[in-house]
Amino acid sequence: MFDTKNMMVACDPRHGCYLTAAAIFRGRMSMKEVDEQMLKMQNKNSSYFADWIPNNVKTAVCDIPPRGLTMSATFIGNNTANQAPFKRTSEQFSAMFRRKAFLHWYTGEGMDEMEFTEAESNINDLVSE
Image (cartoon, rainbow, N blue to C red; front, side, top):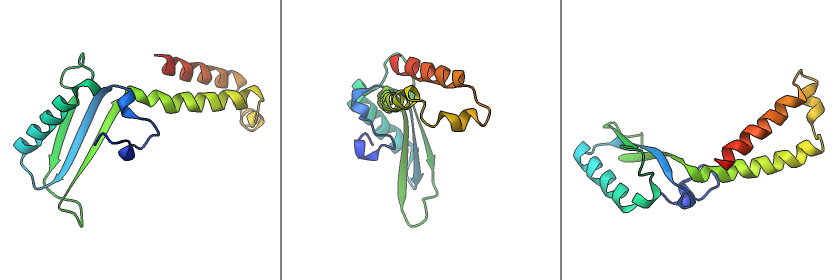
């Protein structure tokens, strides 16, 4: 689950910390087995989880498997390593905004240039936290 190949965002979760996570399982399995495996996984990877947030991993089980499979799992995690894509986007935006590239399309539709400045400030604040 923690392999970078499984991520939907181009970042390495090992460079961050999971604040919260959810694991959803589908198929015939016991809740006891799921809880044991999730506890083992959380203990093994404890350095990747925020220790100041109690009960930060939630699990759910649906006993109906997806069509064509006997079981499946989905892992959704909020990781601080997600700041890397925001930083890349901010750098690309700043380069284009300095040149006012494509800005006329937005101002022509009623947006104000100040909205872009505020958005740039917001994303930079998000990255710096």
